[in-house]
Length: 225
Image 1: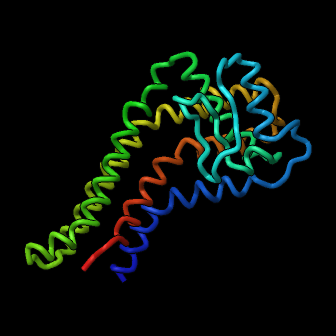
Image 2: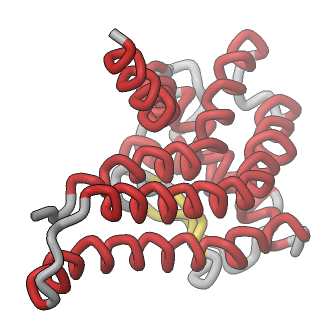
Image 3: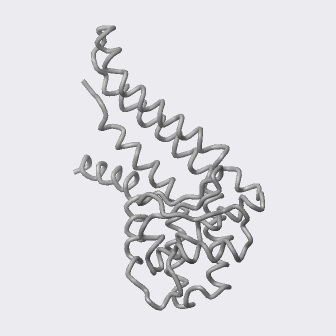
């Protein structure tokens, strides 16, 4: 019984946030013809309104909504770009929030460029160790050690999570210091929808942390002997 509870707790901790983010974004994707435009159209409008010179918006890869700092492009998932829904509007406004922060050179806007490369390096190191360990094990005649495998995954995985947490203020700024005031004060959504919008923006802010937590356990699926 204790083992079952422990497994359930671990799954909740590592997969719960990512599942919640996914459910929230999906929950508010129902079509809303009453909205004045799609996520892509809103992004284009806000680029013009806030005079974000050189910034462009384009349809990107599903689930990979982001602001590319170097290319100065806001890339939106096909459904965000082309649909009228609360999720589409909120996600687009969140990415515009990032573009505004970078255009204004807000101090918080440098967190991702400072820490995200470190998170990527940590993930690659984790993958490299997991892929090469069976080779070293065979070459050195060392038996496979599940404890080592598990320890590497958890340690580097948690370090990646901590790095993503360091970036969280930038995500929070894009959602609640930028996107929410824009949507509320500009009346781009009905006042009755603001509670839902806040949930979506909260999910947007937690996306990277939630993904990092989930990846800790997903790494465990890689080569073992």
